[in-house]
Structure formats: C-alpha cells, structure tokens
Amino acid sequence: MNLEAVRAIYVFEMGRTFRTLLQSVVSPVLSTSLYFIVFGAAIGSRIQEVEGVSYGAFIVPGLIMLTVLTQSVSNASFGIYFPKFIGTIYEHLSAPASFLEITAGYVLAAATKSLAIGLIILATSFFFVELSIAHPFWMVIFLVLTCLSFSLLGFIIGIWARSFEQLQLVPLLVITPLVFLGGSFYSISMLPPFWQSVTLFNPVVYLVSGFRWAFFGLADVSLGLSLAAILGFTGLCLAVIWWIFTTGWRLRQ
Amino acid sequence: MSAIVTISDLRKTYDGGLTALNGVDLAIEEGEILALLGPNGAGKTTLISAICGIVSPSAGQVVVGGHDIAGAYRAARALIGLVPQEISLEPFEKVLTTVRFSRGLFGKRRDDALVESILRKLSLWDKRDSQVKELSGGMKRRVLIAKALSHEPRVLFLDEPTAGVDVELRRDMWEIVKELKAQGVTIILTTHYIEEAEAIADRIAVISKGQILLVEEKDKLMRRMGRKQLTIELDRPLEEIPEALAGYGLEPGPVAGTLVYSYDSQGERTGITRLLNDLQAAGLQLRDVSTRESSLEEIFVGLVAGDAGEERS
Ligand SMILES: Nc1ncnc2c1ncn2[C@@H]1O[C@H](COP(=O)(O)OP(=O)(O)OP(=O)(O)O)[C@@H](O)[C@H]1O
Ligand SMILES: [Mg+2]
Image 1 (tube, chains in turn cyan, purple):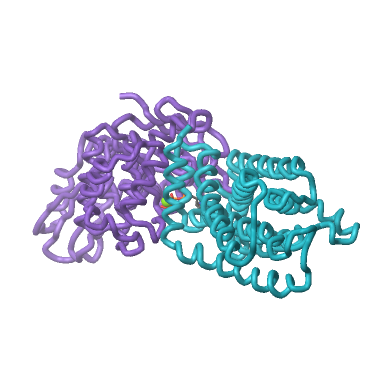
Image 2 (cartoon, rainbow over the protein chains, first blue to last red):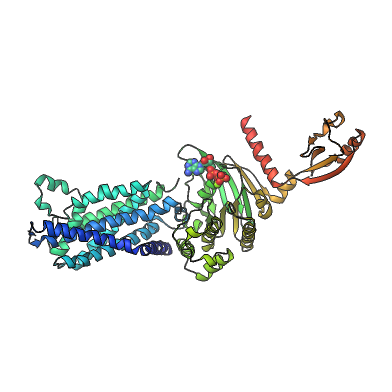
C-alpha cells in the first residue's frame, strides 16, 4: 500500500478546503438556516407534528442529508475534475499508486469536508428547534457512510465530466430532486400508495429513513434495509471506480 | 552497461485512428543521457507518456529496471520521474506544497532537507511560498522539474525541458542534467534545440512517424554522418561554373563570388587537392578558403527529410 500517496492527496485537498474555508462553511449554513425559516416556521405552523415529532425537528435529518449529499458530490467531483481539467492528472497517472489509493485520498478529503459541514448544520439546528438524538452512535454511522458513499459517486462524476457544465448538471438535475423526493421534508407514509412504491427506487429514501431513525426512532424502511442499501451503493461505486482505473476510461488516452 | 529501459514493439493508435507509435524498439542504457529527436508530431511525447502510464499502449512491452510497466507498475513507476512538455500545475498552490505533494504521491516520506536542496539548485527557494500562478513561464518549468526530482527517480524523462527557457537558464539546466547523470540517473530528453543534444547527450535517437530511425552514440554519429564543407572565395563573381569543374558538385555559396564544395570527412580521398588544381587550371583566382563541419542539426534535418522522401516514392 502506498499510504504516503493517500496522505499526500488528502493533505493537498484539505489545504484547498482551508484556503476557501469561509465560503465552504458559510453558504451551506446560511442556506440551511433559510430552509429552517421557510419550512420550519412557515409550513411548520400548519403541520404541527409528523408521527409525534414536531415538524421543525422532523426535517432536521432531511436538511442535513440534503446538504451532506450535495456537498459530498460537489466536493469529490470537483476534487478530481480540476486536475483533469488543468492537466496535473498526469502526475497521478504516472505515480506508483493504485486506484484505491488515489480514490481514497480524494474521497476521504471530500467526505471529511462534508461531514464537518453536516455537523455544523446539526449544531446550527439546535438554535432553531428543540432536538434530541435517540441513537447518537447510529446517527454518526449513517452520516459518515453517507459522506463516503456520495463522495465516491462524486468522484465518478468528476471523472466522467468533460466540462464544468456537466460537473454542475448532475448535482442539480439528479441529486437535488432525489433528495427532495426522498422523504427529506415529509414521511413517505404521507404519499399516495403508488408514489410510495415509486419512491422506494430512490436510494436517498434509505439514507434519510435510517438517519431519521437515529434521531427519533422512526423509520420509513427498516434499519437493516437502510444499511444494506448504503453499503450496496458504496460497493457499486467502488466497482465502477475499479473499472475506470483498469480501463483508463476518461483518464488515459 | 545494461539497459534500464527496454521498449519492444511498442505501438499506439489513438481513439481517432491516428497511429502515433508504429513499432518502437529501443533500449536505454543505465546512466546515459539519451536525446530523443524528431519533428513535431513524430511521437516523442506519446512514447514518453506510454512508458510513464499516461497513455495506454495498443501493443508492445516496456520494462523499466526489470519491472514490466503493466504487470509491475508500482515498482516500475517508482523508478521514473517525468517532466511533461505541457506546463500543468495547480495555479493556487504554493511552490513548496506542490513539490512536497509529488514526493508523497510517489510514496516517499516527507524530507524537507531534500526538497530544500532541490529548490535551491533550481533557484526556486526564494519563491517557495509564492503561488504557482505568480511565477514566470521559465520558473514554472523549473517547478515541474523540482516535482519530478522530489521523489528521487532513477530514470528521468524530460520532454522539452528547455522550451521557453532563456539562454542562461538553459545552461543551468544542462549543468543540472550533467549532475544528475553523475549521480547515476538515466536521462531521456526530447528537444528541438539540436545544439542541446549536441552539448549534453551521450546517444541520439531519431524518431519520425512513430518509428525509431536511428540510435547511435553522438560522437560516432557526427563522425559517420558528418560532412565537411569547403567554402572557396573567388576574387570575382562567376556567371556560371566552368565545364571543367562540373564533376565536383559545386554549389554557389551564400555570398556572391563563393563556391561551396561538400565532402565526406571520413572518406579516403577528400578530393580537395584535385579541386584546387582544377580551379587554378580554369584560371580562377582564390581569395580565401575555409572549412566547416556539419552540425548535428544538419545531420538530423537530412535524416528526417530522407525519411519523408522514401515515404513519397
Ligand atoms: N490525445 C491525442 N489524441 C489523438 N492524437 C494524438 C493525441 N496526442 C497526440 N496525438 C497525435 O499523435 C502524433 C504524435 O504526437 P506527439 O505529441 O507524440 O508528438 P511529438 O513528437 O511529441 O511532437 P512535438 O515535437 O510537437 O511535441 C501526432 O500526430 C498527434 O497529433
Ligand atoms: Mg511532444
């Protein structure tokens, strides 16, 4: 194992994060606060409770997921797209490092950043709503797994993208709708039966459900299924990345 | 000496269908400086990229230090340093961090003393805390060299290291290359400044249209291919070359009133004595004569032009 390579990439990427610390942290916190005001205060005054939890608190896990998912995808995709774009990728390709080591460096850095942002948002939400966390250990597990798996997805998107437009398209066209339709702001059981079944094809449902269970002990799908879905998704992303590096798809001519 | 890089029948056809490498065979000796010469588009960069893992070869084999670049890529790449032709650097990074990064990426432990000595040698130490985008083009190229040296390669590929570098710096670069050679590093360098190859290379390889035309020791090549020219200055310009001198292949020189006679410096007879006698017999008065040896550049141009000619016929 070339652990020095993992560390070098990780440190390099974290350096970039710290250079842009303010914008990295301020904007997600600001937009989440806006969500709290709009959803929590405006809508929450009409919907009092969902399954015994106040609406303001009910949306906290969904809001954190929304930010963590978009952040993971955009951090990781930018992280690998940028060297491709400016040509410094030559160094990664010529280094004695395997796909796992290069991926680990980028994905761990992206996941660290989105995890930090997720935790900051969690802290912020205590200012807006009364919140207690039923299973803190599982809350952290779900958060970490989400950061990792969606950073892997972002990494793939960054390799796939051929332009900055494509890089921004996926989070905008795919991730955001999936999160909004994934039960972030409502319980799946509030939907008509047909849409409930459709929703089960949305991977985000399993994340939000598991994450919300960790907060309130309420879940749309079983805990085991949520975990299996995240792990399966992670495995799928790793398989795709392995394939990318063995074939050199969009990396090597 | 033994080969540290062995390239066998290496081929590369790009996705668009263009064949950039058409069966390259080349053995690079340990510790030598090999200059790889060839016109634009000959396949120099493709060859280097294929060895370094940036381009996937379509066929063929490359072994570096006994390790196959496909099967044992880790061991092979750990020996290799690359200075690419294009200047590709993270613009917002500091010089020092970007050089340290390269060392880590190649699996080497952080070594501040070594990085400092490399940056000092390349006159970059004062710029260590500058962002890359604040540097001049020549400085950026030196950062690329520092990055490649930071992981102590045994084989160093320099793809046009002195393009866009001023004269003084070029000489510094040559010194660095010679120093690396003294430390036992094998160096492969491409350049369009043929005087550069002439100045520092041990051997010359010429590539054209994806094939190696020739690999030879520089000195031997220059002796073998070298032609000398005798320039004869007459006391007055000639209307045309007299019949009696037709057999010498004389050509008008660059200045009016001069004739140029080319001969093989290795030949048994140079024919100079006979020519001078015939000139006198023809009643021509000589003002001056001078000789000049052809440079590597002329040899190179001759070779590549010859190759293009064969292609056409
Ligand atoms: N990525 C690519 N896709 C398709 N064709 C390519 C690619 N890179 C290079 N080529 C083609 O391959 C041939 C060899 O190019 P290469 O860059 O290896 O030449 P070179 O000898 O380095 O030239 P130069 O002296 O200009 O740097 C050229 O015809 C070039 O157009
Ligand atoms: Mg080139």
